[in-house]
Length: 110
Length: 112
Image (tube, each protein chain N blue to C red):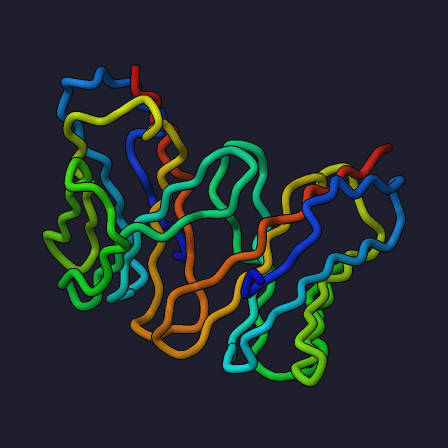
């Protein structure tokens, strides 16, 4: 079993839809949770970072962490074609290395 | 400034060549990382430097040689690579033990 599971997609949605991206994890010691956006042939860009359970909002993006269920989500409201990218969840514990999900490819059609 | 700058952006090298990848950050981060990313896969950690000292080597072949000359710079020296080493090489930085890492745009390496 992988430490972090993420559906690779692709996830195709029309412009304006609400997108839900999810990851599950098995290591209850993970403390920090991140979402990265990666455009083709570019480096990952940090979108959201959370530490505790609950929600964190930044513009059209909301990150949600449920430590009891070992489940994290990223919601994108009013999705745009420019949101088309691969979204990687990542998590870590203390000084340990980042553990990435496989990434979900999102396609937003005009 | 939350930028990690990598050069070159693209590199094509022969299997007998020696080349170097460079990475620079000015965020005051004292942890720097090299990752390798193949197509449609997540980044794989190669090396971690903490306070300019190598702290993690993820069993990377010796044809990859990292170097951290100072707290802002990180190099990856390449020698006698194989075609299967072709990938996107990413540099990242963070506070030591920090909660999030910032990535550069990567160097797309092709070994011919």
